[in-house]
Length: 210
Image 1 (tube, rainbow, N blue to C red):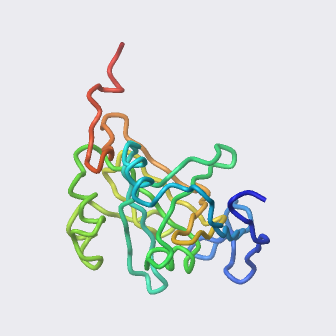
Image 2 (tube, rainbow, N blue to C red):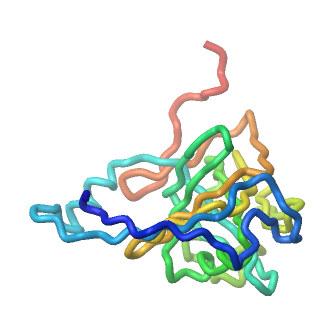
Protein backbone atom coordinates (compact mmCIF):
# COMPACT_ATOMS: atom_id res chain seq x y z
CA UNK A 1 0.00 0.00 0.00
CA UNK A 2 1.33 3.47 -0.86
CA UNK A 3 1.41 6.52 1.41
CA UNK A 4 -2.25 7.11 0.59
CA UNK A 5 -4.67 4.35 1.48
CA UNK A 6 -7.64 3.99 -0.80
CA UNK A 7 -11.04 3.40 0.67
CA UNK A 8 -13.58 1.38 -1.32
CA UNK A 9 -15.23 3.22 -4.19
CA UNK A 10 -18.78 4.32 -3.55
CA UNK A 11 -21.15 4.79 -6.46
CA UNK A 12 -23.77 7.42 -5.79
CA UNK A 13 -27.39 6.38 -6.24
CA UNK A 14 -29.28 9.11 -4.40
CA UNK A 15 -28.11 12.26 -6.18
CA UNK A 16 -29.33 11.59 -9.71
CA UNK A 17 -25.90 11.03 -11.18
CA UNK A 18 -25.51 12.08 -14.76
CA UNK A 19 -28.29 14.65 -14.59
CA UNK A 20 -28.01 18.36 -15.13
CA UNK A 21 -29.67 20.97 -12.93
CA UNK A 22 -32.82 20.89 -15.04
CA UNK A 23 -33.14 17.16 -14.48
CA UNK A 24 -32.24 16.05 -18.02
CA UNK A 25 -29.83 13.17 -18.33
CA UNK A 26 -26.55 13.89 -20.07
CA UNK A 27 -23.86 11.61 -21.43
CA UNK A 28 -21.77 11.37 -18.27
CA UNK A 29 -20.93 8.21 -16.39
CA UNK A 30 -22.48 7.48 -12.98
CA UNK A 31 -20.87 9.49 -10.23
CA UNK A 32 -18.14 7.70 -8.29
CA UNK A 33 -16.77 8.78 -4.93
CA UNK A 34 -13.38 7.80 -3.58
CA UNK A 35 -11.88 8.67 -0.19
CA UNK A 36 -8.12 9.06 0.23
CA UNK A 37 -6.68 8.92 3.74
CA UNK A 38 -3.19 10.34 4.12
CA UNK A 39 -0.81 8.34 6.31
CA UNK A 40 2.13 9.93 8.15
CA UNK A 41 5.30 9.49 6.12
CA UNK A 42 8.64 9.56 7.97
CA UNK A 43 10.82 12.31 6.55
CA UNK A 44 7.99 14.18 4.80
CA UNK A 45 8.73 17.85 4.25
CA UNK A 46 7.10 20.46 6.46
CA UNK A 47 4.01 22.37 5.43
CA UNK A 48 6.14 25.50 5.07
CA UNK A 49 8.62 23.77 2.76
CA UNK A 50 5.77 22.33 0.73
CA UNK A 51 4.13 25.73 0.25
CA UNK A 52 7.43 27.43 -0.58
CA UNK A 53 8.26 24.80 -3.19
CA UNK A 54 4.83 24.86 -4.82
CA UNK A 55 4.91 28.67 -4.93
CA UNK A 56 7.30 28.25 -7.87
CA UNK A 57 4.55 26.56 -9.87
CA UNK A 58 3.02 28.98 -12.38
CA UNK A 59 -0.55 28.19 -13.41
CA UNK A 60 -3.59 29.70 -15.08
CA UNK A 61 -6.23 31.37 -12.91
CA UNK A 62 -9.80 30.08 -12.85
CA UNK A 63 -13.10 30.97 -11.24
CA UNK A 64 -15.17 27.92 -10.33
CA UNK A 65 -18.91 28.56 -10.05
CA UNK A 66 -22.12 26.75 -9.21
CA UNK A 67 -25.62 27.46 -7.99
CA UNK A 68 -26.60 26.30 -4.53
CA UNK A 69 -29.77 24.34 -3.83
CA UNK A 70 -31.73 27.62 -3.63
CA UNK A 71 -30.42 28.81 -7.00
CA UNK A 72 -27.99 31.44 -5.64
CA UNK A 73 -24.69 31.59 -7.57
CA UNK A 74 -21.45 30.93 -5.72
CA UNK A 75 -17.90 31.29 -6.99
CA UNK A 76 -14.27 30.99 -5.96
CA UNK A 77 -10.90 31.74 -7.56
CA UNK A 78 -8.65 28.67 -7.90
CA UNK A 79 -5.44 27.62 -9.59
CA UNK A 80 -5.78 23.88 -8.87
CA UNK A 81 -7.48 22.74 -12.09
CA UNK A 82 -6.26 20.02 -14.43
CA UNK A 83 -7.26 18.24 -17.61
CA UNK A 84 -8.00 14.54 -17.13
CA UNK A 85 -8.93 13.21 -20.57
CA UNK A 86 -10.24 14.25 -23.98
CA UNK A 87 -12.50 11.23 -24.44
CA UNK A 88 -14.66 11.63 -22.52
CA UNK A 89 -13.87 15.37 -22.09
CA UNK A 90 -13.02 15.46 -18.41
CA UNK A 91 -11.39 17.91 -16.02
CA UNK A 92 -10.79 18.01 -12.27
CA UNK A 93 -10.77 20.91 -9.83
CA UNK A 94 -9.90 21.13 -6.12
CA UNK A 95 -12.15 22.97 -3.64
CA UNK A 96 -11.82 23.19 0.16
CA UNK A 97 -14.21 20.61 1.53
CA UNK A 98 -15.87 22.96 4.04
CA UNK A 99 -16.58 25.67 1.45
CA UNK A 100 -20.19 26.51 0.55
CA UNK A 101 -19.19 26.06 -3.09
CA UNK A 102 -18.24 22.43 -2.48
CA UNK A 103 -21.63 21.78 -0.92
CA UNK A 104 -23.36 23.48 -3.86
CA UNK A 105 -21.49 21.38 -6.43
CA UNK A 106 -22.52 18.19 -4.69
CA UNK A 107 -26.11 19.31 -4.21
CA UNK A 108 -26.67 20.36 -7.82
CA UNK A 109 -24.42 17.78 -9.49
CA UNK A 110 -22.44 20.23 -11.60
CA UNK A 111 -20.17 23.25 -11.84
CA UNK A 112 -18.78 25.72 -14.36
CA UNK A 113 -15.32 27.19 -14.82
CA UNK A 114 -13.91 30.38 -16.32
CA UNK A 115 -10.25 30.75 -17.26
CA UNK A 116 -9.35 34.38 -16.68
CA UNK A 117 -7.73 36.66 -19.25
CA UNK A 118 -4.78 38.89 -18.39
CA UNK A 119 -7.12 41.88 -18.01
CA UNK A 120 -9.32 40.15 -15.41
CA UNK A 121 -7.26 40.56 -12.27
CA UNK A 122 -10.21 42.37 -10.68
CA UNK A 123 -12.37 39.28 -11.18
CA UNK A 124 -9.67 37.06 -9.69
CA UNK A 125 -9.37 39.27 -6.61
CA UNK A 126 -13.13 39.55 -6.13
CA UNK A 127 -13.64 35.79 -6.16
CA UNK A 128 -10.52 35.20 -4.06
CA UNK A 129 -12.21 36.92 -1.13
CA UNK A 130 -11.74 40.66 -1.57
CA UNK A 131 -15.48 40.98 -2.26
CA UNK A 132 -18.18 39.30 -0.18
CA UNK A 133 -19.78 36.15 -1.67
CA UNK A 134 -23.11 37.96 -2.01
CA UNK A 135 -21.65 40.78 -4.12
CA UNK A 136 -19.00 39.08 -6.27
CA UNK A 137 -21.07 38.48 -9.39
CA UNK A 138 -22.40 42.06 -9.44
CA UNK A 139 -18.99 43.57 -8.64
CA UNK A 140 -16.68 41.96 -11.19
CA UNK A 141 -17.12 40.56 -14.69
CA UNK A 142 -20.06 40.23 -17.08
CA UNK A 143 -22.08 37.16 -16.15
CA UNK A 144 -24.77 35.19 -17.94
CA UNK A 145 -25.91 31.56 -17.68
CA UNK A 146 -25.19 28.33 -19.51
CA UNK A 147 -28.24 26.35 -20.74
CA UNK A 148 -27.84 24.33 -17.54
CA UNK A 149 -28.43 27.51 -15.51
CA UNK A 150 -24.92 27.59 -14.09
CA UNK A 151 -22.98 30.90 -14.16
CA UNK A 152 -20.94 31.82 -17.24
CA UNK A 153 -18.34 34.59 -17.41
CA UNK A 154 -18.94 36.07 -20.86
CA UNK A 155 -15.48 37.55 -21.47
CA UNK A 156 -13.44 34.65 -20.09
CA UNK A 157 -10.45 33.37 -22.02
CA UNK A 158 -12.02 29.90 -21.85
CA UNK A 159 -15.25 28.73 -20.24
CA UNK A 160 -16.65 25.29 -19.46
CA UNK A 161 -19.86 23.86 -18.10
CA UNK A 162 -19.58 20.47 -16.44
CA UNK A 163 -21.75 17.74 -15.03
CA UNK A 164 -20.31 16.10 -11.94
CA UNK A 165 -19.00 12.60 -12.63
CA UNK A 166 -16.86 11.92 -9.58
CA UNK A 167 -15.60 13.18 -6.22
CA UNK A 168 -12.28 12.36 -4.57
CA UNK A 169 -12.18 13.17 -0.85
CA UNK A 170 -8.90 14.21 0.80
CA UNK A 171 -8.15 15.49 4.29
CA UNK A 172 -8.82 19.16 3.47
CA UNK A 173 -10.13 19.32 -0.10
CA UNK A 174 -12.60 17.70 -2.45
CA UNK A 175 -11.45 16.94 -5.98
CA UNK A 176 -14.43 17.32 -8.30
CA UNK A 177 -14.29 15.45 -11.59
CA UNK A 178 -16.48 17.00 -14.27
CA UNK A 179 -17.48 16.05 -17.80
CA UNK A 180 -17.78 19.00 -20.18
CA UNK A 181 -21.24 19.49 -21.66
CA UNK A 182 -20.54 22.95 -23.10
CA UNK A 183 -17.52 25.17 -23.72
CA UNK A 184 -16.37 28.43 -25.31
CA UNK A 185 -13.02 30.14 -25.84
CA UNK A 186 -11.35 33.28 -27.13
CA UNK A 187 -8.58 33.36 -29.73
CA UNK A 188 -7.40 36.88 -29.04
CA UNK A 189 -6.91 37.32 -25.29
CA UNK A 190 -3.90 36.34 -23.18
CA UNK A 191 -4.13 34.29 -19.97
CA UNK A 192 -3.80 35.60 -16.44
CA UNK A 193 -1.20 33.55 -14.56
CA UNK A 194 -0.30 33.02 -10.91
CA UNK A 195 3.21 32.22 -9.70
CA UNK A 196 5.56 33.18 -6.87
CA UNK A 197 2.50 34.46 -4.96
CA UNK A 198 1.62 37.12 -7.52
CA UNK A 199 -0.10 37.59 -10.87
CA UNK A 200 2.02 37.02 -13.96
CA UNK A 201 1.50 37.56 -17.67
CA UNK A 202 3.02 36.10 -20.81
CA UNK A 203 5.69 38.27 -22.42
CA UNK A 204 4.90 36.93 -25.90
CA UNK A 205 1.71 36.75 -27.92
CA UNK A 206 0.85 33.06 -28.52
CA UNK A 207 -1.44 34.05 -31.39
CA UNK A 208 1.17 36.03 -33.30
CA UNK A 209 2.55 34.64 -36.55
CA UNK A 210 6.05 33.18 -36.40
